[in-house]
Image (tube, rainbow, N blue to C red; front, side, top):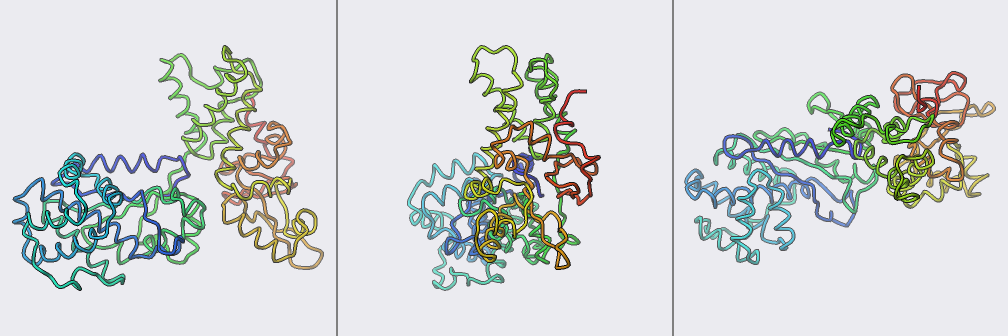
Length: 465
């Protein structure tokens, strides 16, 4: 599933976790806290890296299940128990106490059983391993090589497959592996780094199609393009869904939340405002970038600005709407592009060419401009938006800011209403916010063409009837 940040991915994941009710259903493990990849680089996260974390959680799931049901050991034959001994040594033997607790927390199905296991075996990991092996007859004195799977895809995939089979023998129909918060790790953050980190697992069909297993990914929609462009996306074999919130859906959600929390007295954010021509409810919806979380966040910033100026305010003035929007936009921009926001402020234009950047703004070489543009586009807030004629030569690539929050932050010297009324437009085809300072422009989301003369500005769309 692809969705914007704050679009409801984790809520969807938790619904699946809640449905994993123990024996007779499915085992559910969640990966949402990740080890530092080899070399400290996202690209160092190969298939072995990812599957080793899954295997670690599944080994613990097997041990927790056997500890809560000692009779379950009889369901495993000698080959299963020998393999389990090797897997305990390899996947748990080098764990730190913190990693051990993280792995236990990832086993969502077992809930209180996992907590009881942690309390019961609050030992150094080496003593834990020996205690568990002795209790369940897993001391086969295997040679050391048997507990060290080769760092190869086939080897680690074999162990994952066998662990899923063991869980079936213990009474589970299948195992779900839920992968979430990939873009929130310290070493990801940008679309390029996030995709580089997860791609080895996301594109490995032999793993994703193992029997008794289902992988479900909850991913930032900013990496969907890289996934498709990789040539490794197999939409014919891997179902892919996109969670989108249209402006009308977000508007209805905000209306319902306000109605519920006010006991039916408030049905629009505009009910909080002093008499004004602006539709603050629509401003919040349109500038939340399809994210319910950001919709609530912007609402909060507007209220906070009103209370900051006058703690006893009865109605929110229009000035607080614009002030709250500015605070919100700056926060988002600093989260998305902390390293490059000051550079974009120097550009002071919402569309630009490489030639303009090199000769008029930064006065740097062509190669340096290319590098700068690559960094900006990798962040996901700048993109190639069109081509423009170039006096008989090849057309020039036209780049532009595609995130309206970043646009507001980079044009900080302009009043927000001026920016919404001159540089932001509502796409007639998909209702996305287009950003341009040209007479003709394309929607970055759906590629629909627009002419300035008949385009609807965002400010016009956010005025009351």
